[in-house]
Amino acid sequence: MTVLLITGTSTDVGKTVVTAAVTAAALAEGHSVAVCKPGQTGVAPGEPGDLAEIQRLSGVTRTVELARYPDPLAPDTAARRAGMPELTLAETAAAVDALADADLVLVEGAGGLLVRLGDFTLLDLAQKIGAPVLVVTAAGLGTLNHTELTTRALRSAGVRCAGLVIGAWPAEPDLAATCNRTDLPRVTGVDLVGSVPEGAGGWNRARFTAAAPGWFDPAWSPFR
Image (cartoon, rainbow, N blue to C red; front, side, top):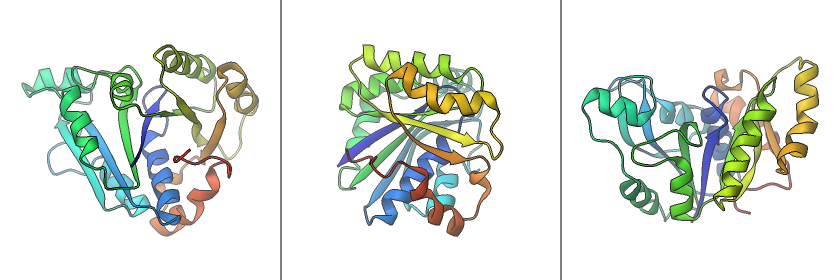
């Protein structure tokens, strides 16, 4: 089993669509994939959440959601407001381990690296299970600071960064976005391993799965 954790430099940078793209690319190579979302927030019981979107786009069938809270907040805050139990690091690590028969297990966080999912952050989970983290980042202004903060936190904690992916690359990039493609790896020391076209989350499955493998550097793989 290979485990890859996926985080963002902030909210709304494209984590879910990137998770779906990595899933689709791995499935296209014939690998079995399982996707775990430890804490889903801002979605009512019975409503489709991030895992449903990943399933819709990639066709993956094995997904696990550990907790769901109604308020669109950090999972620990949402749990307290709802009077529901917070997730624990131990139970989350055990849930990931239970997926060990899959070739690739992807774990999508909530918000950024240090958002508390319960009594822990995604960084804590990465340390506990010894898994690398793929960082999804924005294309435009502000991304250099946010991305360097995230990669420095990983480095300081001794967690390997598996690469950077731009979560929504614009059809008509401005000067900042164009420069950031060069500057992101320069300031972080981490390779930019992919970019997803803006709006790809609205595509149908056939179009998405056909295109997804081409969004990543051919030399990059979640298995390396």
